[in-house]
Length: 392
Image 1: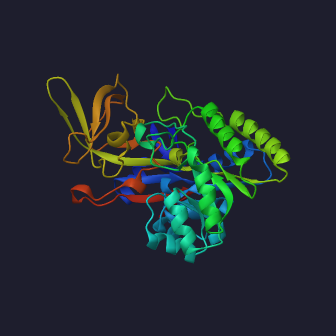
Image 2 (image 1 turned 90 degrees about the vertical axis):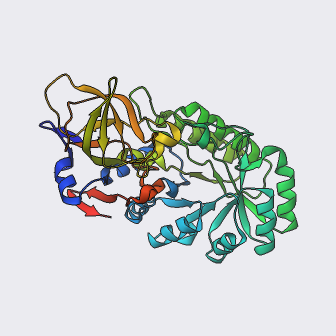
Image 3 (image 1 turned 180 degrees about the vertical axis):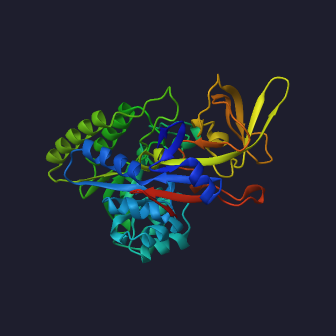
């Protein structure tokens, strides 16, 4: 994505061209950005037995899944639906990990029947899985009491989190596994989403290594995801070089002491797809009251829920630059809710009805969390790849 002669372009396609051809609202994904993000992570984590399991929940479009699989990634899933989409995209059952919470017997039966590897999230899950698949290999998800993330709703570690088996209950977990002849071959943790400080991720890495010493049959350690991206100009994402250098060194040292080379599993989601996606919307009206200006667009939180759900910031730009001092306005959607606001007091190029706005960094948890609220249809999704555009 770049500005050429005052207009926003995706590869050789202007935002205006895409909006006219595919109508708005439309999600535009750039394949090259996904590739760059994937190889940036892999390059910085110099560890031989590294498995990247893409966190499908971030964006489950099958074309995106196929693209990521072609890069060499595997899949991390949280539901039967995600498993089915991963299989449809060409992932082999052996390359899929399933980690979920409050799991039904029916869903767990599907997982077992399809030979999907599991990370069990609770003592009751160990009990249920053991009764259904005695003697199997399993992973267990551990809550070390450490959590982080951009909002309380996405912190998945600590005493307020529903996720994982508390570290204090590890003895019980091992006893239950032994009771059902289950072999614990993987430990898993995930502390939260959009973590911007690599030091916290490294701290969590250390916690899992410490716990792993008490498990003799391990084949892999799954450190989860949580790698953040900078949404606002004030933010800075985690330093992947610092992170990668530290964890590779720590993992090699641990494995030497453990007496066995284990697989390191990482589960990036947002990191790979967030910056690859842009939501295009047309300005439908501009209205004012005595104190504010509102720019209304033909999309809403039914298409991008992050601002209303988390108070998240997304950069919003007019895809056509105009001369002038610009304007300050609230960017609002077309949903019948007062909270349907994409941004307050945003400075933007002088804007007119019919202009196309671009809501940036919308590739993760955008369409994947979209709904038909207000009985409005879902937006279209398109992929820009190697100078071509595809409806996906």
